[in-house]
Structures are given as C-alpha cells and as structure tokens.
Amino acid sequence: MLVSPAAERSQASLLSVLQHMLEDQSNKKLFGLELGSGTGQHVTHFAQELPFITWQPSDITEESRNSIQAYIDATKVQSVLQPVFLDAREPWEKWAGLPQSSCDVIIAINLLQYSSFNTAEGVFKGSGQILKQNGILITYGPYAINGMITPICNETLDQRLREMNPEWGLPDIDVLRQLAFGNGLRLERMIEMEESNKCLVFRKV
Image (cartoon, rainbow, N blue to C red):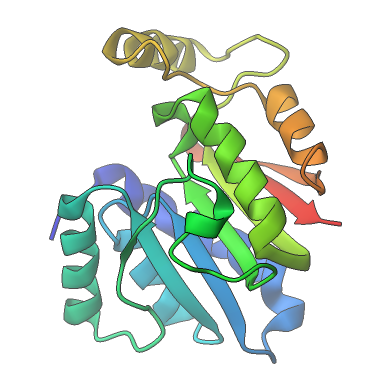
C-alpha cells in the first residue's frame, strides 16, 4: 500500500466537492471513473462515503494498480472495481472497454500537471465520449490562468516539473476550457481548494 501525504490532505475537501455536485443524484446508482488513481487512497475513501457510486479506478503503472488493490482489500469496500490499465492518451475505445456514455462522473486528481499536452487532450476527448449527457468531469490540482502562475509556490512547482520532464507543468485553465468546449463539455465551476489548488468542474452538454 503506497501512501501519498498529498492525497491524505486533500481527500476530505475533494469528498465535499463530490458530495455537493452529486447530492441531487444520491438516490440513483451512479458509475464513476478515476483516471490516474495513483495510490488508491482517494477512490477507496470516496467509496466509503458515497455508496451510491460504483468506481472504476485506473492507472498506467502496475505499482499503482497493486496499491489500489491493496487499499480495496484493506477497506473491504464493495463499490470499487478491480483497477485497470488506462492510458488517457489513447482513443476512448481503448479506455478499458468502457462503453460510450457509460459514466456519470470522471475524476482526475493531480494528473494533468504530471502529463503531456497529449494526455490532457486525451482526457477531454475521452471524457466527451464516455460521459453521459449532463455527466461531470472533475480535475484537481494547481493551474496557470491566462499564462500566469501564482502564488510563488506554484511557480516553483511548475519549474521543478518542467526540469523533471519538459512536457510536464501546470496546465492553463483557458486551454483546458477550449479543449473541453471542443469535446462537448463546458467549464461549469472553478472551486478554490487548499494549498493553492483548484477543482475544475466540466459538464457534458
């Protein structure tokens, strides 16, 4: 079981966002996909508090998928499926065999800043196909706005990420908004979160 201190710190506030965005559907059975599930801390925490959602966790690395399975086993949650390999850069038809319009919610937590632009494109292209009408895509992390990065801690983070991999770095919200628009999604809400992060809520129209 891998442990991410950042996941530990953010899971309560992210749960609050999910609860708020989905409270009017808590009487239904929903299906959620997590892209880049990482350790598995988030998805198992959400599953314990939101039993009306069946979650499909995913990650590109075997190490992460093993950790996710370990959290599923340890928490004994019934509403989290076995983790699957999913590379968001690939066409949606290769997204673990998920049918078109099969998801009510897709979440990507601290994924985009560690990804190439091709991955961001893939996230929005795939979400535009996989989400049901009126479904939501929630992305969480630090962002640039109109090419500007604030505060200084995020600027430092962006520089460090680009040193690690030139294709990484804080994505620009306006660029994501345009990607979303081109794939049938609109940016509905931008929620300020702890540690200079934001939640972006995109809705399939």
